[in-house]
Length: 137
Image (cartoon, rainbow, N blue to C red; front, side, top):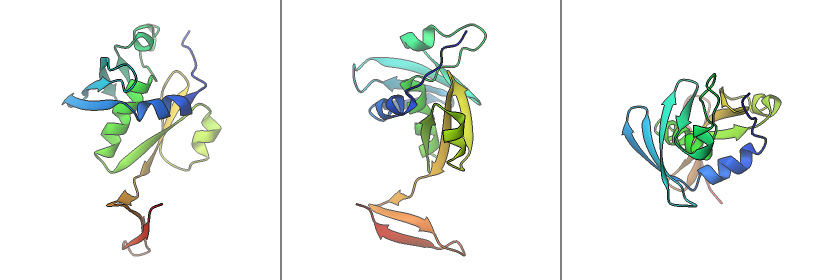
């Protein structure tokens, strides 16, 4: 049976310290910000797999891993579309965000939101599609 991650926010924070390099369309090299080790991450439509210890120990029926390396690669891919992901351990917390959700395995659900910060300013869409800027603190 698959393990369930309860500390999704801690894993999300850890994922932000990793360095991600895209090798091919769905293949990423993720270097841990903690250990300096590099892992292979392959992303699919519903999550990804990783060569880290946690990722290698996934059950055969669901090889997806919600390790920090997969979350880092998902965030890298989202950033290319001007978005940022957040990780949640409880479905009700993810749904409360009123954003697109993606269960990626191990009980972790990602939400995706538009990145507002551009050139040091927070930008929010105005009615009619114009941008409103306010200084980020």
